[in-house]
Image 1 (tube, helix red, strand yellow):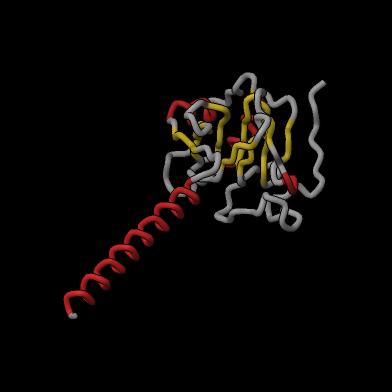
Image 2 (image 1 turned 90 degrees about the vertical axis):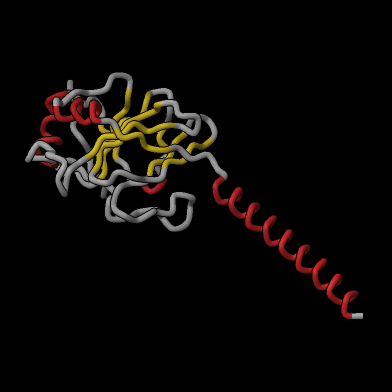
Length: 184
């Protein structure tokens, strides 16, 4: 009798262990799923910014204000920034003069990589292809790839905004209706 009960309990324990393992695997795959990109830190890219170079075939965006942006985002022209809540403000016709104003304002000590430094990283799609550039004080962000070569990039402030439609998506880095000058 005791041996029969032991076999039943042992079978149940194995079944529960198996089910728990499957649940953990399912949750891990479900949470890791999605079409997310990443950032690839690059010192040569830092130097490009510090030399006020504009990356060709990229559209530029800023967040945090025109005079001293919290971040500069460059997205390759083959992609469209999905920008609910207008967290990123498009800036047309960026040139090296504008880049110099931004970099000298946000990194007056030439970014000696101490605290408060800005960092440049390539934005990679899920397959590792370079699709843009991130220049900000934070070395991380969330990058989502959507259908139709659309991309969402969360702004740098330590918060993750709800860009999926909940609320109005506006936060500290919203543009507030600013308009930017264009070159003739």
